[in-house]
Length: 268
Image: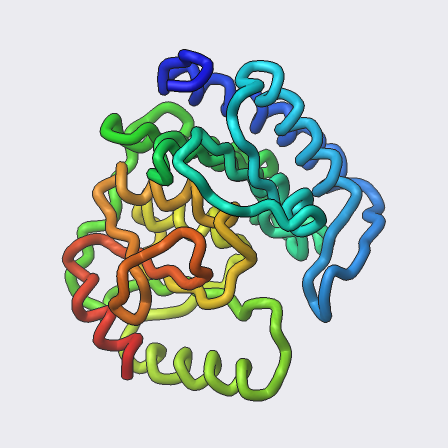
């Protein structure tokens, strides 16, 4: 394995990086924000950029031979080919819109893939001080305690999370609101927290039962969360029944009992 670290050591290094970035996010959260538009409603702040620099610098010091994919750098450099090399996939600030509005669902997400397989995952929300971690084959944890997906077996008693996405053209919005309309007849209630990574962690710890999102930003939104869900006994899959691929921006997640009913509901 490149740079001869153990997976436990990779995780410890990622946690250090996430905690450091978390401090920057926490400071910035209570201050005036300087906001730029990436798209119509997609935002980026100085904090996103500062956190990405900090995380990558921290990881590169420890693992100079590893590859790196990040939301801000990749968007700029277009170098997002995922290879079999150990690759750190980072969203320095997931939930930027929440961050700008002072809504406390923000996090830093750090995932490591080896052979394209998510192997280490860290998602840290510094405002609520929640640290989600996972290592392939070794379980998922919230602040050091093991977590499990919910045991819910009925859609009608399930809490569903999704996101509005960043596009605002009529056809996209009609499709997404129509889908939500149909699902609202079949589930207990709906949440839009504004963070894909935290939604996945919500599935992992059982505070959410169902999650899907179409058209999220890129692999940095899911690289850590997908591993954490699986290690918590959950399933991550393509919402339309194809093979799930972390580079294709559509995802669904739930406990195993709900998968078939959820897929059926999503496809109607």
